[in-house]
Length: 334
Image 1 (tube, rainbow, N blue to C red):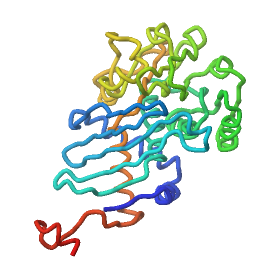
Image 2: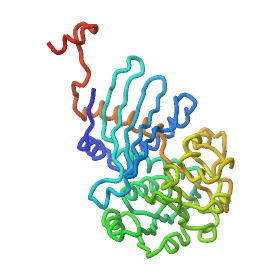
Image 3: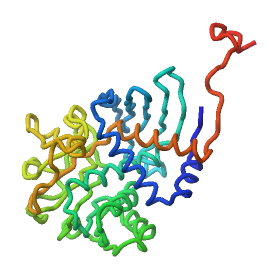
Image 4: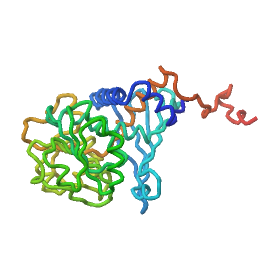
C-alpha cells in the first residue's frame, strides 16, 4: 500500500500550485456529491471527553471505502499542539485491501475549504467581492484561497480574539487581497458579501444577528460541528435559507440542532444535481451549515491516490502480509 506523508502532500501541492490543487479538489467534490445516492453514508462515530473529541468518519461507493480518524481538542493550541489532527485510509472494495494510508490534517483543512467554495458557487451572489472571516486560526488561509477560486473576492475583513492569529493571517496572505484586521466582529462583517465563521469554543454562541448584516449575505457556518456547539441564534437561523451536507449528522452537530423539526432548504447534493435551486434572488440570506462529512474525505483521498500514482509520489510500505499460501498466515513468522 502507498504511504502519503506531510512531505508527500507538499510535493503534490508544489507540483500544481495551491490554487490549481484546490480547483481539482472542488471538482472532485462536485463529481462525488453529484452521485450522492451511490454512496454508503452514516454519521461519524464520535467519543467525547472533557479534553475534546475523537471521531471515525467512514464512507464508500461500490469501488472504494475510506475512513478518517480525526480529533478536536480546542485547548491544544495553548499548549503548542494542533487543535485538529487526522489520518485517512482508502481501500479497494473488491478485495478489501488497503490502497493508501495518508496524512489528513492538511487534507482536512483543504477539503473543508473546498466544500465551502463549492457551496458558495450555488449560494453566494456571483459578484461577491468582500469576504469577512470570524476566526483566523488554522482554517483561515485555506478558506480564503478556496473562495477566491470561485468568487471575485478582493477585500477581506477579519477578526479573532487572538491578535497573533490575525497577524499570522496577514503575514501569510497580505499579497493576495486587500486585508483589513478589525477590533470586533461587528466591524469585520459590516458590508460583507460573504461571512465565514470558524470559531472553536464548545458552547452555544451568538456571533451576530440579522440586523448586523446586509440583505443578500451568504454565511458559511463552520464552528458548529458537535452537539452543544453552535454560533448563531435561532432568530438568525429562521431568517436564512439553510443548506446542509448530510441531514442526519447536521441535526446532531450543526447549527440546526437548535431548530428541531424545522425544514431546511436542501442537502448540498441537491443543489449540485439541479434538483433544488440555490440562491433565488439578491436579497435572501443564505447559510451553509457546514459540519464536515465523510464524503468530502473520500473525495480528497481518491484524488490524492490518483495523483500520487500518476506522479509516483509516496512510499510503498509493507503493512499487509503476503504469504505464498494465503491459508498459512503463521508461516509469515517463520
